Amino acid sequence: MVVKPAPASLPLPALAARPEHVAIIMDGNGRWAQAHAQSRSEGHRAGAQAIRPVIERLGEHGVGVLTLFGFSTENWGRPRTEVETILKLGAEFIDTYTDELDERGVRLQHLGDPERLPGWLRRRVQKAVDRTAGNDTMVVNLAFNYGGRADILQAVQRLVAEGARPEQITEEAIAARLTTAGLPDVDLLIRTGGERRVSNFLVWQATYAELYFTDVYWPDFDALQVDRALEEFSRRSRRFGLVPSDSVEDHGTAG
Ligand code: FPP
Image (cartoon, rainbow, N blue to C red; front, side, top):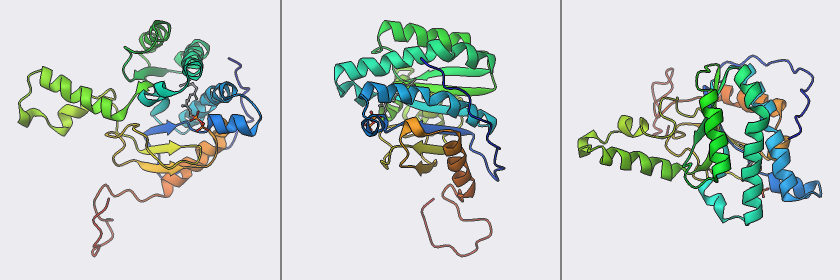
């Protein structure tokens, strides 16, 4: 994989609030390719190359957790060659960047069911996860064969298999068995490529996430775009179902 050269350093904007956990639906690779008269595979390749600068910028902002939607449980329905391309790019990404990410203190984790992934990808993912397990500067979750509902379902199934009684099936007990156990909920969910959907991503974990949609195609999402998303986040008023602290009369119910 060709490593994009580091861009000339962009001054870091001061933010009033910073998300702890950012999740990204990297959409628009296909349309980016079409706009550049390239194949969908080239679009995904450009998409994979866009990841490193985004990790770097989020790291500069001090974001602790980044979750990237690389391949959903629904993506198996795409043409076989495209599925292979995306999975191979996942493996290439790990081959190309694990050393550097490890040196920078990034802990790589995998979200999703590894069983259906081809052995060559599963082994690479596992190796990168094991290798970086002791790092604590930033967590980068690669969601491969991930589905939000499947995540909740397996958590509940595990609880039942452990013999939990109905009253023991609590939100905390479920959260502790999701693939994101131990990580903070998503604060900011970014979707590139113009669609305004959550698409079965971290449906439990993003319940109170601020949603940020941009028309920018994923391969064009760079450090400047990261700054824009974080600046927008810092302007949002997060209420978590409560009323603003300076408001005595508020008849709204939504959070
Ligand atoms: C959505 O674009 C993108 C994907 C389904 C795959 C994302 C994969 C990568 C960025 C490369 C490998 C991933 C990692 C984590 C290294 P789309 O194909 O739906 O675009 P379109 O909507 O324009 O057709």
